[in-house]
Amino acid sequence: MKHFNPNATSLFANAVNLDNIIFDTDSYKLSHFSHTPDGTEIISSYIEARKPWGEIDTALFFGLQIELVKLAGQVVTQADLDEATPYLKAHGFDIYVAGWQHIIDVHGGHLPILIEALPEGTLAPISVPQVRIRNTDARSGWLVSYLETRLLRAIWYASTVASLSHYVVGAIGKRMQTTDGTTNGVAFKLHDFGARGAAARDAAGIGGAAHLVSSMGTDTIMGTLYARNFYGADMAGYSINATEHSTMTALGRKGELEQLTKFVRDNPTGIIACVSDSYDLFHFIKTYLGVDLKQAILARDGTFVVRPDSGDPIEIVPAVIEALMDVFGYTVTDQGYRLLNEKVRVIQGDGVNKDSVVQIMDAMMERGLAIGNIAFGMGGGLLQKVDRDTMGYAMKASANFRDGAWHDVYKDPITAKGSKTSKRGRQGVMLIDGKLTAARVEDIPQGEDMLTEVFWNGVITRLQTFDEIRARAWPKVA
Image (cartoon, rainbow, N blue to C red; front, top):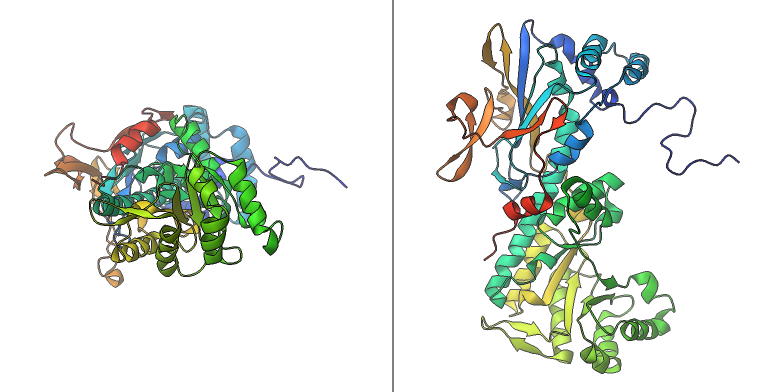
């Protein structure tokens, strides 16, 4: 049997280069070079989120820099063009060989493109452009739309996850302020459990980094790697020692207490978490924790975190907290809410999404329970259950320069009743009364356009660090 390199990207001799930029577009765009009006020299497009997602009415812009790294430098070679031409001919298209050859010969394989964008970490109102892109070579206007597939994919996913995480952490912080009188520790109240549920490794890395803009809790190691490699973060997120069902059930039902005892004994310090519903959640709390290991947990130099993992969380979470209060006691905050003994806390990781988090917290508050008792782990709801339509992300051409003048480009389908009307003219962003607002470039005073250069002719011209992005985006929860 033949053995293959586990890092290989192919198994057969007729493989093609998956990183060939010519392949990375929607098929129908291969023909668009021939659709451009005669005399067109420049095409200007923009990217925006077009609709709110429930209570999320601002989009946290993030992720463009990850894609810019891949677009920088020589990204197309003669070998790429020679490979793509016959392959895509077989796919059904005579591609724009002359256009790609021009980029190779004149620009050395660098993309003749200008990209201007908001600073990453900016909270942009819906329908405010986050990115503007145009060609810098009059023979390469076709390239703007060609890159839509990559640019839009890079921005909608990262920005949607970042917006989601920002909203949830903010919602937790606001309720902590109400019940605990503080937001201390809010950066660890939403934990990323999404790595195994992500569509691919890159999704885990990009989405995981997007989450970390507003949080410091994660089990998605790949997210910390992307934050380091693409944004210079030393260590963007942290995790703790925790069990799972495979470890807690390793000795069967009768051995659960033995496994729990070993876990507590082997970890006398620090924060540790234990999945507690393998068999009987409330027996686990009342007997194992309340009798067998109560003194050991109270003697620990750290916090023991109970993780219920089944049932209706709106009912289960308050019941678990109150059961732990019966065992370990509680104090009452100055705001009048009950807070568990500091030796124990709860994390809910099942059935968690942006809506259920709020519902769980509201149920807790109705029963007089402080939000400081709980943290949340979000998996598929964080990294996977989003799509481009979640916030209506789109890239649209809005102007072209032909015959010596700029001309508006837009769509306004009657059947969409205004929901898909695109912006006209070269789009920019300016502050009006302290609010980011879309505006035509010619209407923005010089030096006040918030879309600034980040990429010019294959060179990243502005590098942004994770610390800078966090400073712009950190939830305002006070």
